[in-house]
Every structure is written in structure tokens, then in C-alpha cells.
Length: 313
Image (cartoon, rainbow, N blue to C red):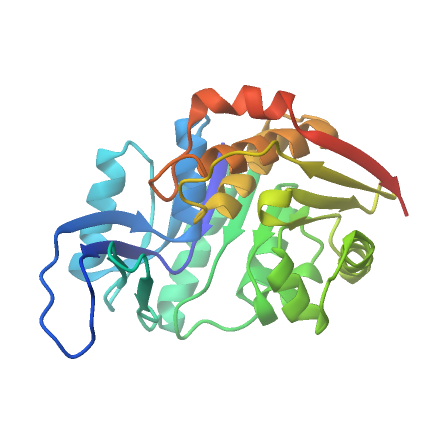
């Protein structure tokens, strides 16, 4: 089973409007509500690919209860730690006239030390039943910066594989605990390293630097250009580029890539096969208008047309 951790879940609401202006009354044409968060996106993709998955994290209040109902309706198994605070709501105002999107992101509930320790007990139980764990996204208030480090160490103590997809200080702390794969995107890698990555040689150098920090494999996602993957065991980098497609919605493609890597690890595929599958799943997500969803029947054709290059370093 694959365990997907989403510490800062949200109910995502997209408000479709015409000619949005601040300071005025705007009537909403359409509301699209989804259970949001990077880990929930990962779980949704894994479930759609008929793999066993369960999602965990924190939920609270009426919004948290509604989120759990949505996941039940979507047949995505979940076990959350319930907190006193209210699960956040994130709003995306989509103006169909200007084609401008305006996002309003709540910070999430404050989580107490007691609730954090309760979650650790739940996580430890779920980890023992899983063989791959994905750790994704931001964290709610009240949680210490070493949260992902602690989660990685718990998983490694019982021999589980871990994929880490976060940013900033949480990424830096997590890498030091040697997760199986870390997956920053190019912007997140630039932020952490404090420099621009202008070409493929810069990206390879950044990946090697991440390996030196402790990760076993680093995958730097590059949007439509694919992914650069480097392995400390093989001392090689791999550059995989999907065929050109007409994207519909690129939000969540990185989460779909994490799902692809998780499935590859779960099935004990070679690194080559994991990379190709993860890139194909990510590209198929760009063909779906719904964030956290994929077009399953396009995966094999995309995978067959990936440009794959091996680079020694």
C-alpha cells in the first residue's frame, strides 16, 4: 500500500465569474469544490490508477468533515487526525473575460502539540502497513520545522521508501534524513540553493548538490520539459522529456509525477521505468481540466514517445 501524507488539507473552491473587479459585488456563475492539497492530489491519482492508497494528515471542523465526505464519495480511503481548528478553504477566482486567476489561500488551522503527537501515533501505525510513503506540501501552524524529518526517520526505521515533495526549510531539513526521492521543481530548487538554474548543466549540478545533502535520488521537475533525475547509487543523471501536448490545466502535474514515482517504487520497477512512468502520468494530468485528475488512457502513448537521455556525472 502507498501512504500519502497531506498535513495541510483544504477545501478548494473555484469561483467562475465574468469581469472580476475588487470593491464591487460579483455574481458567481459556477462553483467547483474539490478536496485539495498536494497529498490529496497524489492519492487521487494513485487511486485512479487502481493502486492501493490511503491518505492521512489533519482535518478539523465542518470543513474537515465535508472534506472526508468528499473523499469517501470518491472512494479514496483516508484516516485523519481530527483537530480543534477548522480545515482551511482556498479560493480561486477565475475570470473568464480577462482569463486572470486570483487565488486566496487560508493558512490552515493551528495544531496543538497534543494533536501532533496523536498524529504521529496514527502515522506510525499506517507506516507499518505501507511500503511507500509520500510526504507532500505545506504544513499548518503550530508544527515544528523538523516535522518531515521526523516522519522520514519513522518510515526508515521500519524499512519503508519515502518520497518528499515540499519546499524551503522543510525541504532542507527533510533532505538531511536521506529520503528515497526528493522532488523539488526548478523554482523550489533555485530558492533553496539561492541561484538561478539557467541550463541543463546547472540543473545537473543542483541535483548533485541535493544528493550531497543526503537524498538517494533527486527529481527536479521542469514543467513541459519533463524532469532531471540524479541517483547517488548509479552516479548518473537522467533527462526525460514528454512529447508535445496541448495542456488544459497544469496545476497538480507535479503531484501526479509524485504519484507515478510512488507506484514505480511500490511495484519495484527500475529507476528508468519509474522515471518514464512518472513523466507520462504527469503529462496526462495536464490533459485533464480537473486538478488532481489524469487522463488514464493517454499514459501509454505518452510514455512510448518520451525522449530519454542518460548522463554520467
